[in-house]
Length: 295
Image (cartoon, rainbow, N blue to C red; front, side, top):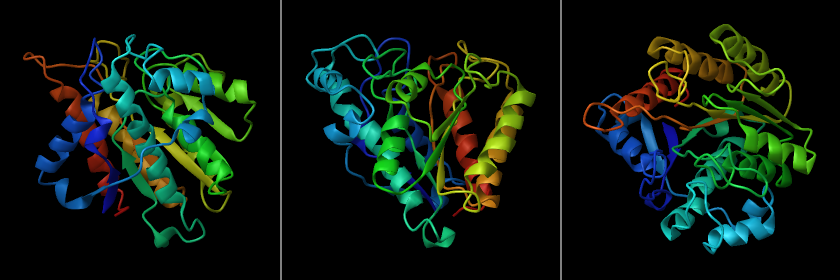
């Protein structure tokens, strides 16, 4: 079974252009309705991230201002429904990361791949929101794993279409040297923004975080917005995205690298204004996760 860390409290009304605040509920409903996926996923409860856990990655005054709705969130407003959802979106990724790193010496002690149906992380800076991102759950999870002795190194494979500038800002601000950050966005030194470079980076990096190399964990943003038809997207076809996901999961299993993946971006809509094209891509990622034999 693939553990999926979901609670309805993660969900808030979609505001503005991005559907990400409301997307978790739509993705979960889609997976539950899919006869090929539903039997192989298990929905898991979790605790929200605490203020202290979030403040490892962010300026404490910024955290307080966001949660009190005094500072605009990543959607540019102070909607209390968004603020209430934020500890749960970061908490989902954090709980999934703790799950796969428990008993790290024994791959079979627990499932080593888990899913957090979350978005809205990588543009959140140390003390600033932006790009529909408010708290950086990737960094919240990474810093918690290190502080709790569950991992020595973390690899962030960010396959959202856009540069993970918030993630890089937090790494630089805190002086972190044990996180490897590779991003589909083309501005980070050594990053990739073409299919050969993307696949090559994945093939090189993921094995380095396997159980034979270190006590590592991989955080994989399986973004749907790098699809060639996405209005904010790039160059990958549906088949290319399947190949990308298949490679990540296969390498994680082969090299015994604990891995958590989340949804990240996706902005396509069908003629009725629904996000069915995005749901289809997330459905494909989960199907590849199941097919990798990690259940």
